[in-house]
Amino acid sequence: MYERRDFIKATGAALGTGLVSGVASAQYDNFEGYRLVGEAPVPGIYEIVTRGDWAYAASEGALATININDPTMPFLASRVEGETGQDTLDAKVAGDVAALAHNGIPAGISLFDVSDPGNPSFETFYNEKDTIHNCDLHLSTDGRVYAYLCVSDSFNKARMVTVDVTDPANPQTLEGEGDYTEGTEVPDEERGTGGAWMLQDAQAEMANGANSPNHDLYAVETDAGNELVYNCFWDSGVVVVDVTDKLNPVAVGHFGGTPDATGDLVDYIANEKTNAHYTQPTPDGGYTLVGAETFPGPAAPPGGEAAQPAGDHGGIRVFDTREVKPLAEGGRAIYPEADRDAIEARGYDPARVGDQFGRWDPYQDPDPDRGNGMKSANMVAYVPAPEGPDDAALTSHNFDVTDEMLVSSFYQGGVRAYDLTTLYKGGDYEEHARNPRRPVEIGAFAPDGMAFWTAVDVDYEENPDRIFTIGSDIGKGAVVLELERGGRSPL
Image 1 (cartoon, rainbow, N blue to C red):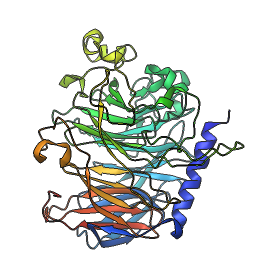
Image 2: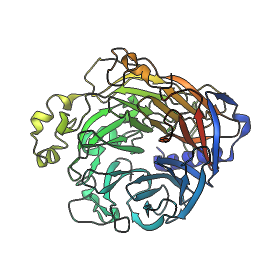
Image 3: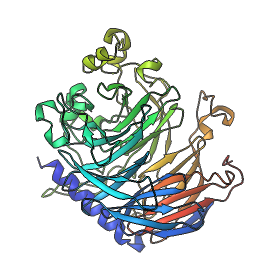
Image 4: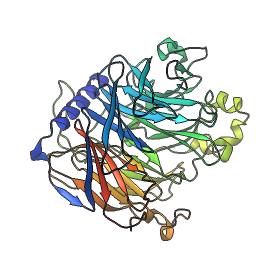
């Protein structure tokens, strides 16, 4: 058995290097429905997020801000260095705070004051026990800004950790039973307690088998003011955690686990297109989209023999998650025994809020399943990776979901837009169909020589009839695309 941490870091580094260099022979030109309307060079760009007139990007250890007031004329307004330039892939923003996740050493997040987006300032570095591949920030109902971190030290301790970053110069972890400032201060025996949720406590067999890091997460607030975090535990699927009470998180959904989740270690990225790499729910939470990052292979662990090509380029699964809700809105605790203390601290009876749901099955076959078994969510549709040359990286990566659209990156498969109204009866977002159809592709932008890390919808308030998408061409810059269709409704 080889050390999976070394293998994953090795494969991830190799993949990133190959895509940044841009091997033209592995790419192709594909333009349909999208047209390029603007570009902003940003060195070393990876993740990009938007808010209002601004886009925020991870840029070789720095936070870059891009003015998109006019999407056809984006420009780089600032680039502020964080703690270090080592392996920074993810940037997030909420309130007046931005964070840059450090996937290398030192481990943690760089925090910035972005009250003036054109002139942000680096405030401090928050230290954690292990590298932070991804994070999310959320402006809570109590007016405070919280960071949710993917912490995966030793993998079997993979967890979500909550950090109060309201004052980006003085962050404070909520993990642990004591009053700690940084993650490095939390004793090992207190990992997963307080403002943290750990897979090991609820599904030890999953946490101890195969590949189950907390790879990415996404925080949302419901119309009623309650809060959920959707965690991607790779082979173990998505765990939805109710974080309305920050010190007492409770799991209220678990779905999309693969058959490999409790088995021996398998190739991290040459899987059967079903791992949980990235996730985001529709705005009403009725559906949750889960993207896989997988490749056909062949691949081998360090010192091992290469396997035969297996699997496929990962696509995006769609789950019906109408039953996954916060406890205050009638949601159920998936693991009432593991979360008993948190449930009781919030004033609920574990026997009532967890009745029967503790037996629900987190596994999901790759083919659509509309109701067999006791699952907290059923897969109802699948968006396959685009077709392309055999040697191209075409797997799904990061994406964005609106009321009507899915926009996603597929590395060298480009940026793609899909109509999501096919999931809803008569195109009505409020009324779910009995037999939802697969989202339909309505735009593609896959030029030779480009590879995309993410794609994000641009909310252009001055003219809502114009539909823009911003994508990050890995290592090079941001590109703005316009969907060549009339009206906000794609069809």
